[in-house]
Amino acid sequence: MAEMTFEEVVASLAKKKRQMSLLIGNGFSMAYDREIFSYNALYDFLISKDDLLLTKLFSVIKTKNFELVMQQLDTTLALLDAFDSEPALKHQLVEAQAKLKANLLQSIKTLHPDHVFKMPAEKSAACASFLSRFLASGGHIFSTNYDLLLYWVMMRNSVENHVDGFGIEVTNFDEVKKGAEPERSDLYWGPNRDEQNVHYLHGALHLFDAGAVVFKEQYTPDAFLLQNISERLNNGEYPIFVTAGNGDEKLEHIRHNQYLSHCYDSLSKVPGSLVTFGFNFGKYDDHIIDAINRAHNTPEYGKKLLSVYIGVYSEADEAHIQAISGKFKLKVHTFDAKTVNVWGG
Image 1 (tube, rainbow, N blue to C red):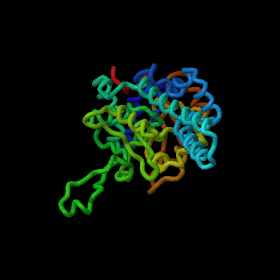
Image 2 (image 1 turned 90 degrees about the horizontal axis):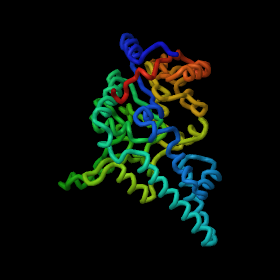
Image 3 (image 1 turned 90 degrees about the vertical axis):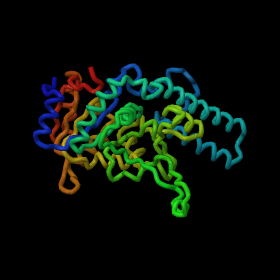
Image 4 (image 1 turned 135 degrees about the vertical axis):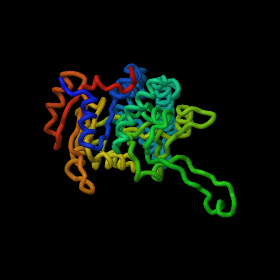
């Protein structure tokens, strides 16, 4: 079992004045609530309902990527319209689309706390303190999780120095110059991308791709975040998800989305040292290892990633990391993940 503790890792990197970044996986969310955030919980929740129509959809399209399934259904319906197909067939597809949307929404509501204030304040504050240590060193935070926990913690505790790349702009600039009140856009990705240090590598529930732009859903005075997400879903908008597939399939999806591609490229050039928590480097995560190796081999402006510290929970985890260590082109260390107090006592 790994002998280093988390505090020993942090102390060692601080002594070296090393920029320290964080990569979190599903274990980060499971540490908060194992029952809610078990691996692939969203997909498993849908399939556990034994709905033959949904099971057939995922089987035929051969993906757990909800966004892709929705897009395939939209494309198929458009083709059926173009070729004046039988109304009965179109009806079946519309029914399947409506059922998937309804069940996806139900899953989100069921598997996640209703709003940020359902999270105990002491847990939220403890997590903010944990995350701040990385940002304070000039590092980045990378997440492969699709849930809202990271976003909630950042917002509720006003974590300093965090930049997710999103911002607003005045949409009636010419009228404002003539004295009109400014009208502001939704939060969209791009205005602060150069300073971005918080990255959702596989998307998240609050991020929506509108084609030319990526929007971030936010709280409004009369609705919590999940309520606003529900409204977008009802309007035919779907969160950005990369929920399954092997490393190549995940990377292909990432490269077809401007936001995801930027996040991946940021990981591919992060300098200093990378600490991981709750990320197991499984058989479908080779794209993440490739990005880490690029950060080591192709440094930007003379900086490069020098080492990675991987949190492990057990001897089996330790053995797994040792078995795949040859995939990494830089120094790999392990530490005891049980010594990380992410969510407080």
